[in-house]
Image (cartoon, helix red, strand yellow):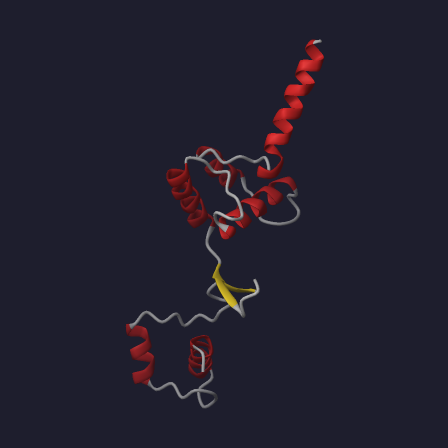
Amino acid sequence: QSLFNFCNNARYGRNHPGRGMVMTEERVKALDEIGFTWAGTREAGWQLKSTGATNEQKRSKSFESRVEDLKKFKQQHGHLNISREEDQSLFDFCTNIRYGRRNPDKGMTVTDERAKALDEIGFSWATSGTRGTRTEANKAFESRLAD
């Protein structure tokens, strides 16, 4: 039995006495002592992500936690132009937050407070894949305009 299934069975047994795994007071106490999370996978913010590996689990993080991750990344790498190869999860966050700002009725909610927090750490709202191309196009346009 996998650890994932064991945890789900323990949660179910505690929430449904007389059904599933028998959860005595001693068992509950033993799990509490090791910091077991009684909230289920959905309640705890776990998502299943299929990436070729079977049922890889990925913890959803709070926005504030993601900002801290971005700060750490910038400290380590000197930039916030995160590629998929460097950090898939942080890359996805950046893509989602940019999409949410461009499409207020869809995607991640980007409040003024969130935008300000990202602006303060130097987050670029331009997509990393087009930033260089646009800069070159602008330079070409400006040089043509000067002619």
